[in-house]
Image (cartoon, rainbow, N blue to C red; front, side, top):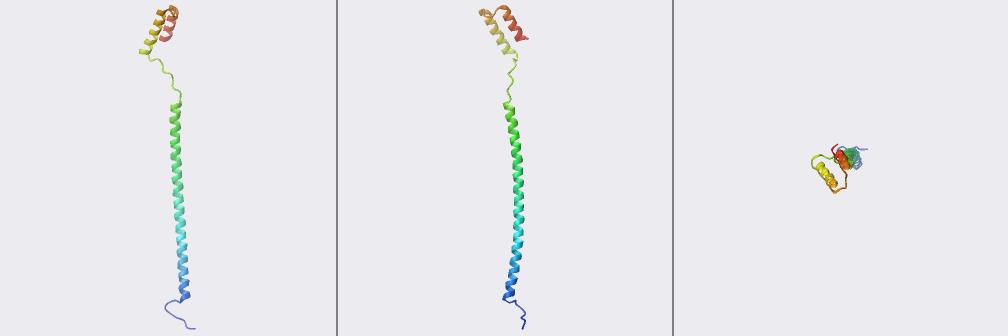
Length: 113
């Protein structure tokens, strides 16, 4: 048999093409897998950060709701106008005859005490 030198034959060319295509497919598949894993990890990291941020927002909202939901203490008489107004009401009730001197004195002591 005579061996030819130079260009490969049809079978050699097909074999070389198959090897190159197979190698390119393997490398490409590996790169795609790596990119998908990287994208998946990045997505999971973003989801984790979003859930942490949402948890902080929920905690702040609950704290604000608890602050506003607490019953407000009734305002203590702050002297001045409220006390004077109450004493005037008592005096008018005493003048009208609704309160006796003893009842007026007891109510007045309660307000001032």
